[in-house]
Image (cartoon, rainbow, N blue to C red; front, side, top):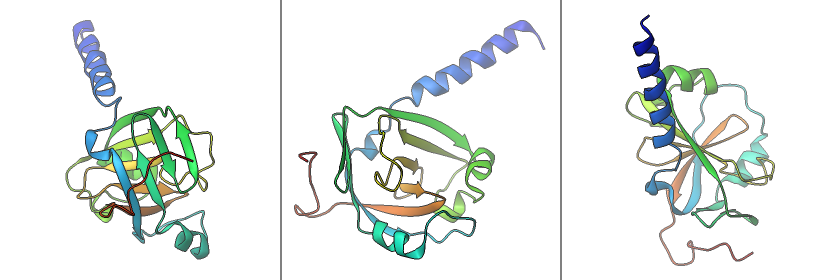
Length: 157
C-alpha cells in the first residue's frame, strides 16, 4: 500500500473519532427507561434488577449527568461510531434487534462516572434508532424522552 494511502486512512479514522467526540445534541435532556428490549444472550442482571431499572430517570447535559440519585458533575462523554459488525462483536446482537436502522450506531459512553453500572444506569448509550438504547450488564433498555414537568429534573442532588 502506498504511504499516502496509509496516511489518508489514518486521517480519515482520526476525523471520525474527533467528529464523534461529543454526543449528538439529540441525547441532551431528561429521559426515562421505558422497557427492557429482551435481546437473547448472556446477561449479568436478574429479572428483579431489570425490573428495578425500568422507570429510572436519566439526565444528560454538558454540565451534569444524573441517573436516579447518582449525579456526575462536569461529565465527560466519549463517542465512537460502530459498524454493524463491530456492534455485533460487542453485543452479540444485531442493530436491527435494538430498533436501530442503518449500518452504524453511535456509542456514547459517560467516561466521567466512577459509579458502577448498576448505580449509574445509562452510562452506555447507543444512538441511531427512533429512541436511544442503553446497555447495562448485557441487557438493553429503550429510553423515552421525559414528557411532563414532573418527569423533567436537574442535577440538584
